[in-house]
Length: 443
Image (cartoon, rainbow, N blue to C red; front, side, top):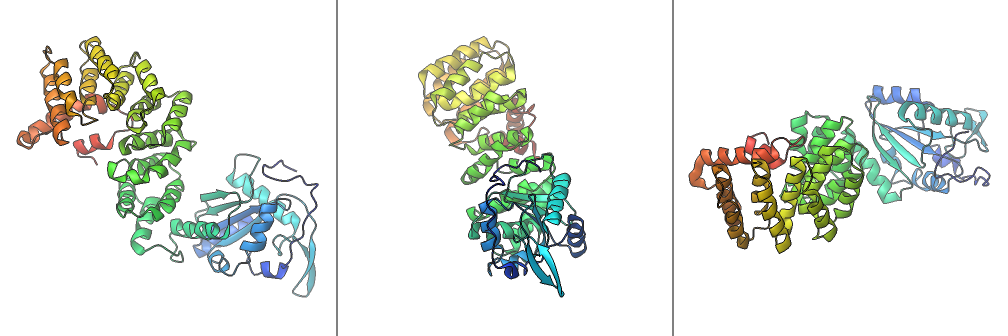
């Protein structure tokens, strides 16, 4: 018998569940092979319901939710497979004139078959021997899992989960979503990469927070890391700041690439409330690009944290220019501190001929939109022979005063000039900022 988490000891007395006949109304498939075959043949999603006889949460869900009149019609939209890993007492039931022994948990299958189902599911869909229960796994008619939910759910949350699973799958049986929303969600799940991003933005442009949960689950159901990351990057726009909490969920994703995409999007959102998470990620991160992006996000995402400021000041001495640039840009959000102003002025001189680093220090003066910073910023380039840096100071002043770094009279020439200058800061990023992609015409 395999060990399981969240399971009471098998020495706990089994509480037999009543109403076996009520549970028999749920059409459970006998085997994983039969369930997958039926899902494929009928074009329906498969729901694998994983439980154990000794976990009270499993007993509650099976007893109250699977027999609930409001839940049963939604369950009927799925092919259903039950599993239970432990051996427990069976009850006798008459089927087609014959008496058979079945598990009181599900009412149609014996313990041996339920245990075999659990072993087959674990072997097919998991790479670990321990499985938390109760757990619900949703599998598409292609045989690939697209949504998992662990732990007990109350009735409203369970109905929401089932409907979300149908929406992600693309079923017309899903409640609560209009055709436009369903179309966007289907594109997010199955469309080409560029169309996925457009669909995410389309949903966010609806400005309906109620749809964020299902959008999050839909993106979570994407298997390809790159595609998932691109969908997360679509959130990176200041007008979507209201969706920051959803993006922050991906900071816990097992994929470092996905976490990195979330960090960059949070930076662009100017999200608050994530400082501690970012600091924890920085402490553990080993990838240099990831660490650099965290440094860059700490400025716009901090709540004037002394810890953040100290970390950034410490890292302005980093050997890698890109790390120093990240710190300079983040420290731009602390330029209301005279000590930070003095530090950046000192670093500007230290950078010597490093055009990108000096450009970053100049551009950092734009983030607070504080006109009192214009004079000290111009003082930095007063003796500069590099005309590009003088141009950047003028563009930065325009940015502080008007919100844009290119005057209309400059036309395309000024636009390209600014793009080229900022390309030294943003152009070599592994995960490009949306503003830079916009300047390039790629977004």
